Length: 62
Image (tube, rainbow, N blue to C red; front, side, top):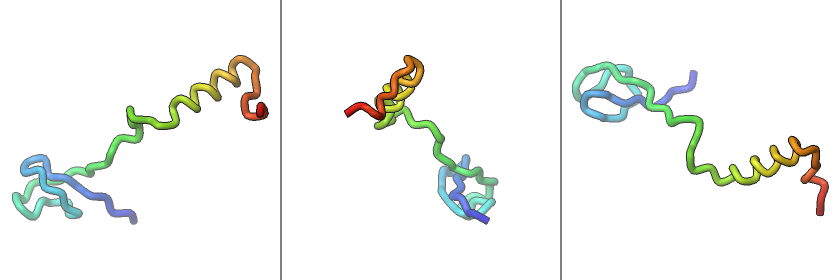
């Protein structure tokens, strides 16, 4: 099973345990969001999507 880092909501400490070793409260999994607003390849995906919608095949052009 994959272990994920956990965060304590009370003292904001990071741990791998289900209970915080500092304050004893329950922790939650601190997983980053899947979507990032800083997307370096967004421009290319939009261009490819527009090419497919317009019926163009932009991948074959040199």
